[in-house]
View 1 (cartoon, one colour):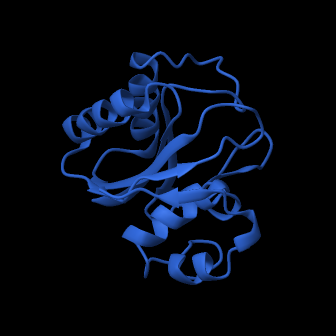
View 2 (cartoon, helix red, strand yellow):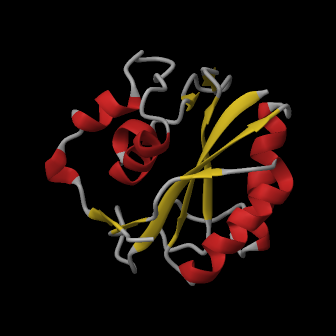
Length: 163
């Protein structure tokens, strides 16, 4: 079994889409470990605030099947394959870690896993550090707790919501 981590975000009807997505993830993959929810400003565009969190689960499915399932869930929530990256969305499910797999795009050599959003965005790293503080980044070898502690606090535009 492989431990998988998925970043979840929504800024359109987020109170509906996130709980439904969690139900669908649990149905597809089994029990979930879920971080707190963080509210963050839209980055790279003007839009309503996002709710973001990270969910983890174990699976025996290959990485391609996990990715495919995430895209199917997004599509059921109105997110089409041609959706723009920097735009409001009903649901965003990003595979950020698939065990310790380091995966590069064969076409351009770009790193796909671990997803670089982990190091770029507080709304990905903070919830990941919350549920997997001692897990190590497969490329850097640092724990997510260490990475979060060294994150540039001047760039943080989010707050943890009370459960």
